[in-house]
Image (spheres, rainbow, N blue to C red):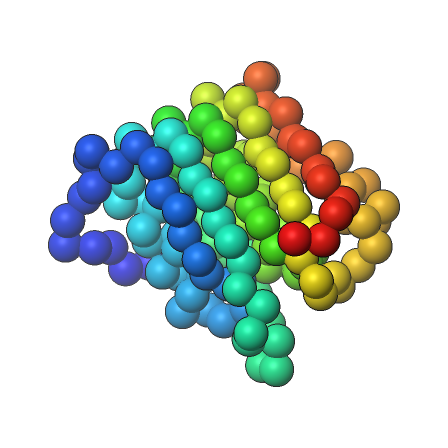
Length: 142
């Protein structure tokens, strides 16, 4: 995975509009997060204008992210989630890598690829490296 020519050591909070439908957007998001080692709060709003293409496979990105990925991340908010496999992989990656994560808030978007029940059952199987990590889901559409 590509890296940026600089590291954002002073970046503590980030609000990001992105999508997890095309590989370049997924890689850009991961690259940005890998170059923000002191990031504590992350808010992502998922853009839903890219639903005509073929969804990118994000499953192998776990192996490309170091142990320092999201190491100081404490709060994550994701709005507009549609339970796409690439979105689920991103959530799983953050839960697996963020060792001091306290809370993750998930808010549903307009388009959904699976039922909330199926998605929540899948979320329950994800390993959380932080013993204090709690995941909150608001089923209301954003």
